[in-house]
Image: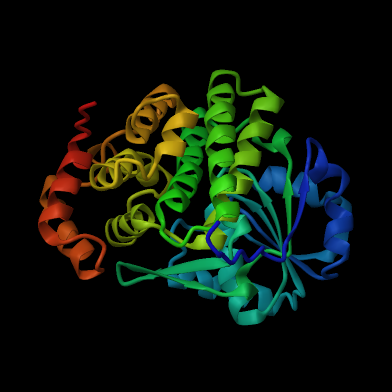
Length: 347
């Protein structure tokens, strides 16, 4: 066996149906006494219910969350934390919510308790990002890593099917990426394959029967593993493509991952046919790319960039952006984007 190094992230995970109602207060107790709640306007009623036992310890609420965390949003959240004299943050929501909390944490050194309500996996990583001037930049800091993550599958039963599908495909992308990076260690490779299995099974159940708590639990478990592997090995080419498209053209984060993932997998398999063999085996297909595309279609996820609002006139400048970021050379980037734009697929 080859030598390897594996670094586990120093975060605590509390997993189980009902955990957000039974254990959240005790988890927050360990980290702070003046809590800034970060959530969205849509999730605010749920967040208010969950934090009710904390009473006056919630000294501020920030709901002006935006996708891709614009610089001005991060600045406003930091101001809210400072004005409230918060010593702890509680994020309740999806990847944009925890991303906003991370942007505060790296500046103010405040610990985060995260309660995810989508399958982004971001809550398990020390990676954070900001968008400014049409460019999304990411960085890595242990100050951004939530200290505690509370996964409660019951919170996901009202998640719309479309969000379930796209955020789940986003999580799958982390697992697939980990399988192709050359420095992935054997432990992370095992976690990635298990993440693919759990997500594929759980997402099918969650979309077909939204109130199926066990299906939601499988998907949550897969998202947890997906975030863990992303934290261990970092983003692959697929993730870099999505960051450029999202930051430059304002495309929605998770749906963009959903569209791009099968094409990115095909790009890998065209060059190295055996690179995603384990993913293909888990999905029960000869090629991982075909299995990922079939899963996206089964879940009702978007399958073309045109569906997400990218315009045909954006393809050439987008290819130039990808080349400038060193993701793909310009001809390859243009061919890739043209296929993903139209949603063309040939097995």
